[in-house]
Image 1 (cartoon, rainbow, N blue to C red):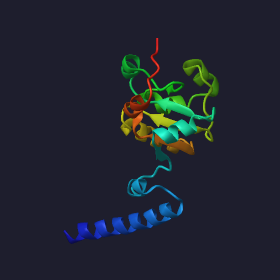
Image 2: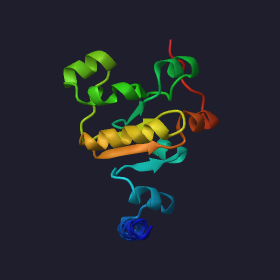
Image 3: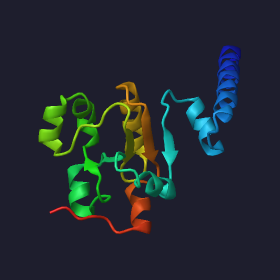
Amino acid sequence: MAARLGLLCVALRCARGTVRRAAGQGLRPQWLAVRSFSDNYGTSINYEELKDLLKNESVLVVDVREPWEVKEYGIIKGSLHIPFGDLVSALQMTPTDFEKKYEKKMPEKSNTLVFSCLAGIRSSKALDVATKLGYNRVHNYAGGFEDWTRHESPEKLS
């Protein structure tokens, strides 16, 4: 019991230091605790922040939901659908193969990517995947497709 308590104290001291460093970087308070226990460097964004990012044509929204979800419910206009299970292989393709398969130019590691799913769980995992593959400007649309449809109509795919 004492050993477990000691480990918990060490973990909390480490997290507290991470929170202080993150606060110095201007991160929002609600993400400090989550980020302190995570090894990703992306941020969670809301609808307004996503709309602001979408003003830049180089931002790519990647929807990681399953194909049946996209077919049945639609997609955020302009986003690219790559199911979560295909994400690792997609982000490691050659640019030519990526463009053939997804009909979009492959994002560069310095491009801004925003991952979206239904409610932010798979997209958070996608952010971790992309970060580990070297993408350094990644975001998670935490509200996901559910939040998007509260603000705007989805695009239906044929």
